[in-house]
Structure formats: structure tokens, C-alpha cells
Image (tube, rainbow, N blue to C red; front, side, top):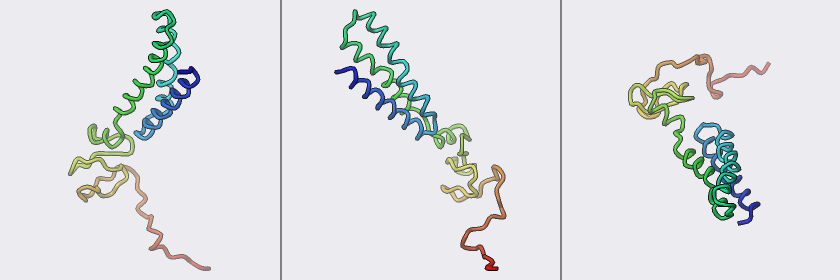
Length: 136
């Protein structure tokens, strides 16, 4: 494989890793860096150990994106972490059914039980359909 094609594949794979991490509410930039930064030192170390064998260096160049890909897939998202820990990010665990719900939710969407107030809520806010507008 040409080195330029390998570099393009590594960057695309690192972008996929970053996208997966971002969808799971983790830092995509850190996952991109973990996918790309170790490639050069790993290839240099393998080239010293293998006597410059290009095939072995090419395969080891994909080791870092592969490890980052497995890590990105194994990350839990905010809802999973809230179900396990009780609270994480924008989610908390419902005290009635133990399912993850948003912190600002008033009712659990799984069991329809009332949730305790987690933070300041704007109780004076009304829906747009119930608002009346003064014309003058």
C-alpha cells in the first residue's frame, strides 16, 4: 500500500473514532489524537526492530487506530452511565424504575412517575399555544 493511501485511511479511521466518541458524549478530539499521534512513534520503533520491513510497518501503523476504535466502541454514553452510577451529564436515574431520564424532566418517560426537582425550573413558563398576545 502506498504511504499516502495509508495516511488517508488512518485519518478517515481516526475521524470515525472521533465521531463515535462524540456520539457517546466523549471528547472526539482526544479520540482523534489517540488514533493518530502514536502512529509515527510505533512505525519508527517497528522499523528499527524489523530492519525496515515495509509490510510489517504498514500493519503496525493501523494498531493505534484499531485500539482507539475498540476503545470508542466500548465507551458508555451518558444514559448508560446514569443507569449505572445514578447520575452522569444530563441524565439521572429515576427513583421508581431506575431507568435513565434527563435531569430537567418532570415525569419519567418510562414509568410516568413524578421526579424530584433536580435544579431550577422555570415554573412561570407556559406553552406557546396558551399565550395571549396584546395587539396594542
